[in-house]
Length: 364
Image 1 (tube, rainbow, N blue to C red):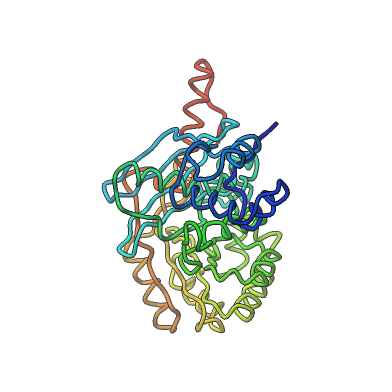
Image 2 (image 1 turned 90 degrees about the vertical axis):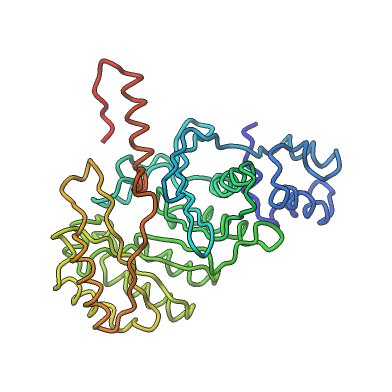
C-alpha cells in the first residue's frame, strides 16, 4: 500500500476517517494534538490508544521529507533542500523578521509558468505536492527550531516557493485549513499569504472561499506587451482578464491585495513604467499595495540585471506621488542562493554531472 502523509488530512477529514473505524471525535483531537502541539515524529509517540495508533500506522506515514541540504545566511535565513520519497527535491525557507518567523513553502516539484527571470522555472513541473507534503515543510522547520532548543514558533507563512500554488488548488486549500486550525499550529489567517502568477479563474474561486488569508499577484509589468515578454502566462491570461479577476476579489472579500513587481534593470524600471503602473491600478488605490522586489540574479537568465538602487527609489517615489501604496521588500539570505528554486536547480545539475561524469549536464 502506498501510504499517504497524515499531515494531508484536515481535522474534519481526520475525524471522518476515524469515525469510519468506530472512533469518536475525541480520538481525532488526541491525534491532532500529538501531531501539531507535541509534534511527534513517530506514531508510537502519540497520546492515543494502541488500537488507534496501530490503525493510523497501517494507513499513513508521518515523515515523507528528508533534509538533503541546508544553507544558513548571516542574517538568520535558513534555506532547506528536502528530498521527497520519490527522490525529487524541493526548497523551503525560514526567514526571521521583527514581527516573527516566516516560512516560505513550495507547492510543486518544478514549475510550468515559465517566467523568464525566475530560477524556479528552470526545471519544468514534474508533479504537484500533496497537501501533506506542503504541511510537512512547516513541521520540519518547527522541529528544527525545537531541536535547537529555541522557544520559537513559526508565526507567518508565505506560499511563494517553487511552483504555482493555484495550479495545485485543492491541496493548497487543505494546507491552509490545516495550518490555521486553532486546535493545532494556529497560524492566523492574516499571517498567511498566497502568491499567484495570475490564474484568473482560480482567483475568482479563491475569493468565493473566503479563507481570509492574504493574496499577492505577481504582476511585474504595467502593460500586456512587456508582461508577455517576461511572463508567458500573459499570453493565455492577458492583463484585462487578470484585472477583472482582481476587481472581483477586492469587491468580494474587501481585503487588501499585494501586487508584486520585480525590478529588472532597463526592462521594467523606468519612469514611464512607474507612471503606467500607477494609471493601471489607480482605481484600486484603497485596497492595493505595490511591493517592489529587488531582483536576485540567476546565471541562466543573464539577460536580466538588478535595478540600480537609485532607480528603485525613483520608481517608489513616483508611485507614492501618484498616491499608490507602495513598499520595498527587505532582502533575506543574500549571501546564499536567495532566488527561489536556485538551490534546487544547482543541486540537480550537480547530481546530473556526478551521475554522468563524462557528459555535460543538460538541465537548463
